[in-house]
Image 1 (cartoon, rainbow, N blue to C red):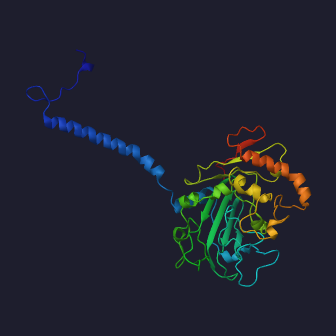
Image 2 (cartoon, rainbow, N blue to C red; image 1 turned 90 degrees about the vertical axis):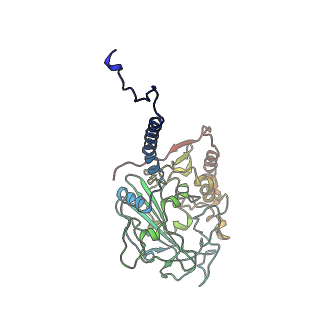
Length: 353
């Protein structure tokens, strides 16, 4: 017999059969090997499924985009609030105003017209950082307490973008925002709030509806009448690369829409998510924004694109209505069969820094 066909003959019972103990031993060894193999295969899946912590996400953002410094919300610029063209009375907490915040473009929310929210531009070089300190409860202009802080962080070179939102304030007092901690700060100065105590986890931020990326579907920074009042304090990158990093955000793929000769795409892209659901209609006066007062619902405040509009309503309609209708038709073309509509992915980020 050829040697390569030789194999070990198992030890047998004198009558030629393996003992019960030996059979159990073989089965046990097989079970152990299968269990070990299943553990090895499951390890990468478990690692992949684990949520990225705040510090892990913030660390990635710092490495790939830049550092967010600590800041005081009261160093920001007030976002004006007016009611039918006039500032609110002292101690007035208006529900409606000329230019509500539109943080939730499809529903009225608490604080959308409260005075003394602030915006800060913390940008440097290609690292663009916009911080918004929001008040939902009326307080004095320089009161140290706020109800929410959100940050949009974007790299105008590689297009990578990160999103940060503070944990909800507990009660009407809000929280002290005299030192908003950098999201990647592992140990704060003595007596100061730590990053993990201040910021919401990336998974929870990404899970909100409508989410950051859905509203910012054409670029990292979006215009509204509210934020447009301090637009010189907001970084912009309307045509640059744009994608979201971090495990909770990176799977969100964005698409833009265009039509031939469309007047609405001369200054920026048009997204296909909340732009379709809300912003195209809101900016063209097709429906009223939540929180609008009487003046806000009349032309020209009811039509806030283009941002430098000086036209009469008739002139605006002549110049823009067909373009608006064409975009809305594309929004409704879920199967992408309309030959007049072009659907294109937003240019993705690169690894440059």
